[in-house]
Every structure is written in structure tokens, then in C-alpha cells.
Image (cartoon, rainbow, N blue to C red; front, side, top):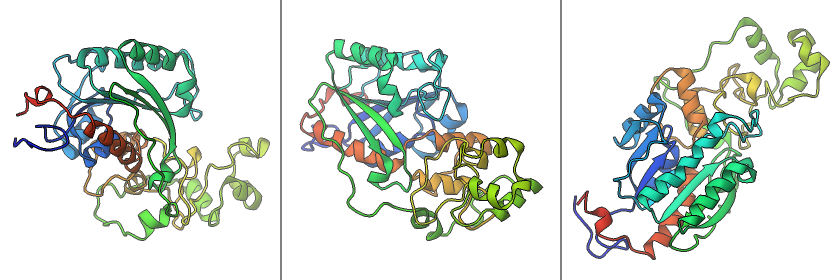
Length: 346
């Protein structure tokens, strides 16, 4: 590979990064699109790893992320440990065994000694014992920490999704990503105004049952469970009638002229949120969900519908990842990367 001799990163073409808990690589793609080079991605989900290798770079492995690869030269580590134990949409079980997986980030940091580490999770994560443990370990290794809580809607995603980013740096603080001044993007902007190829293999959705189809047909534009209870109580289960105010945003149609709610792994299940198409009697397709995360149409994710939906819902909206990556690139440009860090690929 040709080296640059006078670039901002010395003789290295691009700063290199490792992605832990990589999933299908949405955060990786945000970094790659901003000028970074992935050298290793690790995840236990074999289908997500296939997606990463097909769509980003063939450097992902299906492996236990707690087993460190010590002989890697990387300038940045990005990591998105499981959030189910911390999310307000989950059980928030403090005994969830997945909560402690993030502790391995300190082991990777000690072995690789990158200049910057980025840890992504739900906002609730930064109020936990696990966050405190990871933070103390990184501080002991010489890193200084910053925390940003950012909403994807402010950076170009057509989706409201708040995420916490913990930045551990040895090269100085990064600036908080600047919000877009433009009007937030809507479902209409990213889906309706850009027709999807009908032959797209990811433009699929579950065939609704007879009861589900009746419910879809009875839900008005921008309506949901509340309107269905009012107009067609015979289509509603007794549990809805007993507690009419609970989870009113489920079985809801997306407002085409607004950004959507958070795209969860279960976004093709109408009982999990406002995921019904604005005009058609169905939930949104896999491709429509992918567009709301900023995934290019050229990406084809590996697996069947359920694992594909999980790969989409588990990712960081690409627009948000790009905004953060650009800020990190700025601070790295002020601290040129050594030729030694790139010698293996030269």
C-alpha cells in the first residue's frame, strides 16, 4: 500500500481502528467513511460478522471479545458492549451476565495502547457500577475521559436515538460534534421520497395475520393503539381494555413528516413500538429500517429476517458515527501517528 509522506498522519495513509462488539459494523462504517481504516472487528454473532466482511472490510472474526488479540497496531478502539442490562427499553437487570463484558475493554486498551478509545452505549450505562469500573481502569492506564450524550436526530439521522459516548484519550480532549442546523430529516425524506427497488432482497416484512391486518386497516394516519381502542375495541385484547393507558405508542403508524422513534431489534413487531408504515397496512420493511439507520441500499445483511432486524436495530446510526469520527480525526491530525504503528501494513 502506498504511503503518504506529508499527510497529517505522518507516513500512514489512514488512522487504524479495532471494533469490539462490532455487530454488522454500523459504527465502523461511520468511522471508515470519515477516513479511518478498520484492522480488526470482533463479535460473537456469526451472521453479523458475515455482514461486516461483506459490506465494510474482510477483517471481522467470530470470536469471544474477552480474548484479547495483543499484536494489533491500532490508533483507536471503538466498542459497543451489550446495552440490554442498562436500556430503559429492557429489563435493566443488574445481574445480567452481559453487563460485565465491557470490562474487557480495559484489557484491550492495555494490550494495544491506542491513542483514543470510544465506548458507545445507552445513556443509562454511564450511571452504572460497570461504567465506574471501566472508567477507573482506563484512567489507571493514563487516559482522560469525556462523556457525550448525543441524539442521532441532531446529526442527520431520521430517527430519535440517544446514545452515550465515553471518549478515553491520551492525546487531548475532542470537541463535541456539532449539530446540524437543518430541519430534522423525516421518514418521508429517507424512505418515501426515494423509492426502493421492488427486487431488493431486504425490502420484506412479515405477512400479517388476519387479526393484525384488520388492526392495520383500522388504524388512521399517525394513529395507534389509543385510536384502535376507541374505534374498534373488538379488535383489541382484554389486556388493552384493562390498562388502556399503558404503552400507547405501540401498534402505531409512523408519522411520515417526522423523524421516527428509536429503531429497535424488534422493529418488525407492531407490539414493540410505532413501526407501522404511514400509509400501507404492514410494518416497515428491513430495508426501510436500514435506511432509518443510514445503511446504504448496496448493503445486503446476512441471515434471515430476525437476525437481520437485530443487526439493524443494534447499530449506531451512521450519521451519528460519522459526526463523532470526524471530531476524533481532528485531534489525531494534531498528534501524527508514527510510522511504526503502520509498519505491518506498509
